[in-house]
Image (cartoon, rainbow, N blue to C red; front, top):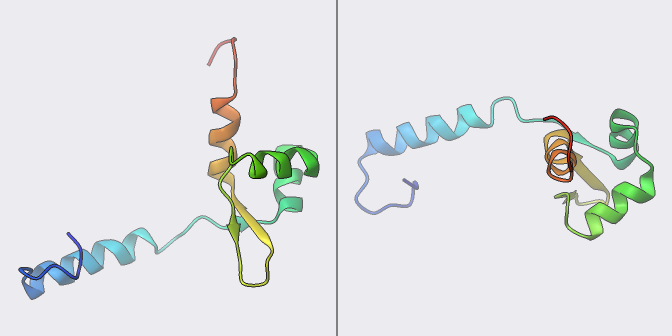
Length: 86
């Protein structure tokens, strides 16, 4: 339920806000392309190509620099796996 719902009681709105603030209490840190390349042992051009192809979600900050979540990169790597044991 969103806080803008017309028929919400104050208690429901407080509960919704409390759940939202807890979910953002410990957000996953954003990595630069260089940091992500170091963590996942990738070449920068490979990572940039995946971002451009929209295989990996990226976040562009106000200064125009690209940031990535490690979990998004892990998901893309796992999704591209072919064959072998999981």
